[in-house]
Length: 261
Length: 371
Ligand SMILES: Nc1ncnc2c1ncn2[C@@H]1O[C@H](COP(=O)(O)OP(=O)(O)O)[C@@H](O)[C@H]1O
Ligand SMILES: [Mg+2]
Image 1 (cartoon, protein in one colour):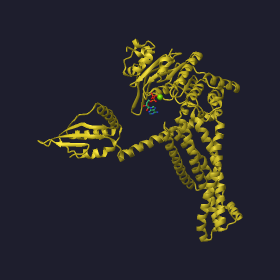
Image 2 (cartoon, rainbow over the protein chains, first blue to last red):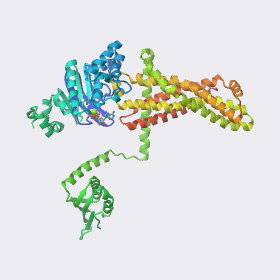
Image 3 (cartoon, helix red, strand yellow):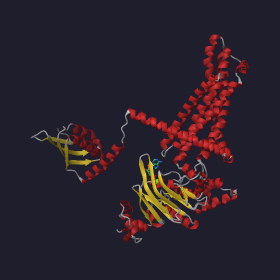
Image 4 (tube, rainbow over the protein chains, first blue to last red):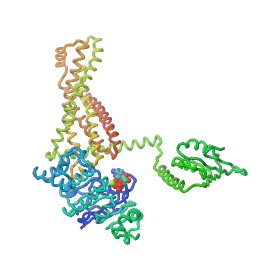
């Protein structure tokens, strides 16, 4: 059973069509990448999955729950089963990191104060931050630390599903690789499904299991790296089969034949 | 006709064809001179335009070329020769972007502007009505389940918008009371009706000026703060983050600010009433030599509690207007910093206008009831 299934999604802003019949499905326990050029509607698609936006038409099923006509109580229940990492963290600026991680536990669960503090500390450790970071405010952190802190917050309700919007953008190469490693570790450790928007070739070639390529308002290729590389679509050609990727990835990973270059 | 950048020659046999040859540096610095030369080219059926003499060009030069090429083409055929690959690439790039600009550019004549603004205002009012509708649903839910009330936030905002505003509200009211008394004193002294200064000051301050001055100060102080705070949260996606965590922004952001203001604004109005009257008392003493005892005695006689109540009724209404407009404008902020400024301004202007309009409405209603 798919974790997320989207079919025939149409999205318009005014008279501009962003998606025109987008369909994809995401399976349990995979790291699923959403790729596409800037402005191709990746973030909008993710916002539709997490109920921040509603498509003009089409069907979305998340964790066996259809989002169309969902009741308020069902929506609240669903929201607690996923965590979201926004592109720029979106940590609450008026709260410390520890408070940011704690706030959902405080509102949506009845565990004791002491337990909460322990959970917060464990999340901080889990994402590889020093314990003292908990007492800092978001404005006092570096870009990489903000992403980690936001990831800790996204994990606070022990979600089964994690959404990441460009998790490695704005990080230095070493930080980005470490973040990739962290995502894989967490996926294996916590048995979660990860949906991530990314442009990062390193992430795509190393940690993404399956992916969808958005171009021309549609999904032009979906599947594992091998499947996607077989596509002849101009975007795929340009993105995956240029000289740089040929040298850096396709050679090393023995994918040249698959890609037909 | 010859210039450093452009030479043209009319074919001797007929007047229907000319050779134009461009030369020199077609760059931004020379653009004006080149354009002057281009304007002088006569309009004929056929032009052969030779670019081989151009030894330097930038995008401004190519854009100028595109402009005149289009113009010449409306009159007849143009043949362009002697261009380089680099010029052609630049031409293609710019020609595409040129078309894009043209298609997205909308003609805005006066009528269209009025029409567009009317539609925008209508959409804005509709959206505001939706916002108020949501807000009432949230309040109704809160009444059923009062444990969702965010008392900590309410007290925080009550302190920020209420207690911290005491000084400025008191001072403003004091000055306005003084001004009223000075103005009134001059007129009343002519009739020897000095003592009526107390009536003028007390009733106008308590019924009208106290609530209005307070509302205007608070609209400028807290209404704008609400918009900026919520707008900044919108830009950093904190509001989206709240939603995904199942935190309804109405409970967490709007209602605490609304309730805080509805509690504190009446208290501030009470404070403003006192200082307004004190200001009047001070001016009466200075200008007319009316003693404090005389003033207070007269105050007891003329200032019915009725006036106080009529003034005070307005306070929570004004508070509602300021808080809802302030929050609504905050949610309207889009993803750029400029929009925070625009919406903060709009928030203050809208709420002051609505406060004054409602004040006028209250006057009409009070008169209708004969109070
Ligand atoms: N709330 C909105 N209102 C109008 N247009 C929007 C809105 N959100 C996104 N868009 C437009 O939708 C398109 C896709 O945006 P987005 O999904 O953010 O792109 P990306 O793939 O780079 O993440 C863009 O052209 C953007 O301008
Ligand atoms: Mg995006």
